[in-house]
Image 1 (cartoon, rainbow, N blue to C red):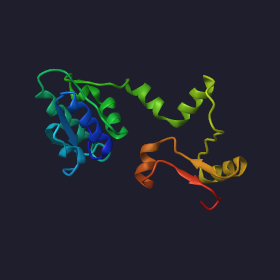
Image 2: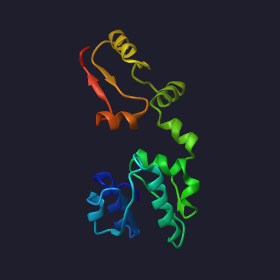
Image 3: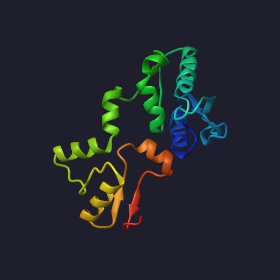
Length: 174
């Protein structure tokens, strides 16, 4: 179980542990919330894949070499999932992953792809623009009218910079 620092990781640890599943919790923070669960049989402090993907993959590969049988690997955040899926050949055959291969995963994570697929299949979506600059975003907001919801196509980088996943803008200044 990769990334147990917050409640979603703790929830996954508890759900698996209550079913009698042995849980090895992985996180880069020694104080990670999930490490405190009684259902964790082992704690592995590994580098943060957002800042040291090589180290994260190496830690998983090393731990995987000591596992006796193929085991599922779950991650609760995109940074961890993406690193593992992109570099699945490096972590070894011990892990079983519940995600598609990288080209598929990368596409489905892009907001533009999600919207285009919804439209193509007849699912209604809010009126959407895809600006590539601040000026284009301001022009799109004027065209759509306020409030507007600003959500990036690349959520990982945006979240690192702004510490949130989206903005609601009620005025041009916002």
